[in-house]
Amino acid sequence: MDSLSQIVLGAAVGEAVLGKKVGNRAMLWGAIAGTLPDMDVLLRFFVDEITATQWHRGFSHSILFCVLCAPLLGWMAKKIHKRLEEVSFKSWTWMFFWILLTHPLLDAQTTWGTQLFWPLEYKLAFQNIFVIDPLYTLPFLVMVIVAMFYKRTHPKRRFFNNLGLIISSSYLLLSFCFKSMAHSAFKNALTDQKIEYVELDTKPTPLNTILWNAFVQTPNGYRIAYYSLFDGSTIQFSKEYSNNHHLLDAYKDQKVVQQLINISNGWYIVEKADNHLLFWDIRFGQAGIDPDHSPFIWCYQLTIAEDGTVTAKRKRPSFNNMSEQLKILFKRIKGV
Image 1 (tube, helix red, strand yellow):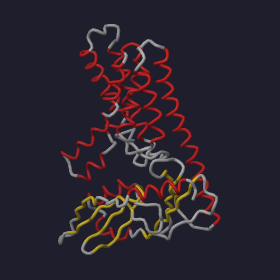
Image 2 (tube, helix red, strand yellow; image 1 turned 90 degrees about the vertical axis):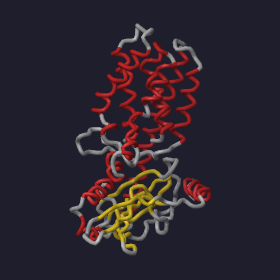
Image 3 (cartoon, helix red, strand yellow; image 1 turned 90 degrees about the horizontal axis):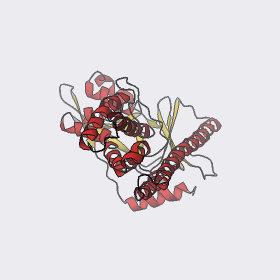
Image 4 (tube, one colour; image 1 turned 180 degrees about the vertical axis):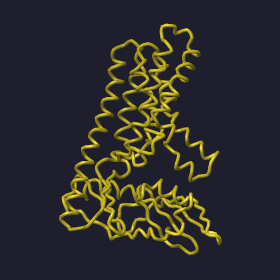
């Protein structure tokens, strides 16, 4: 999730665990520690871009990291707040453990997911919420801010903080219900239209949990579709995008190609372009909601040297006329 959501969640969890004893210090520490796992973005200064991307949401988003890091933060907080003798090292550690753990648990509900059980190569990605969702973050933020203005022992402080946790958590649970409804609609449409497929993957479109995006893996490629919970018409699937995986057959033993396939979880398209190849990781959707014509967002350019060595560079997408695209998105959310 975005940094603001993680800051708010961390602050709320800190308050829930230790706020009655230490007041706004718990929220402050929660806001700081709530973003700590995302410091893995600094890996880009030490390793190549592809490796940094592969390691993102790895160790720093694992239970092991929470277990190792929580005592260190607990010791630091205990040293800084020496005057709070009634708050033990164990209490500080327990607070930080829950702050650190809820971060990857929230991230696990996005498309990228998390390696919660690192070093096991197993990624949790429930794909029930977009990485930025105002309906999750804003009510939560309001409740936490309101709670801050009450004294630490005032019952309304705990009430508003807990209310924020309840509202945000309920929204996440509701998003699972919405995902199930959309997934069933896509599955039924595939059956009704007699479309042969291998796997069906569903995820929400930007900023909402009403309009859903389906990625359908066919024997030779992929088909895309969109479905709003307010739709009343038949779901229209896109043309079939050929995956062209055979274009990488000669290079699959190379590290960078193996990394890209691993990052994409196997959901990728390869295209020829001049003297190089384009590797499209399609899990992150399209720049628009026209399944037949909107380009995919996440792309790497593969350059092949004379000796057959492959190098990869991320191509940054160019988003044109974003205001118009948002208008189209919100119109489509309404089932129009």
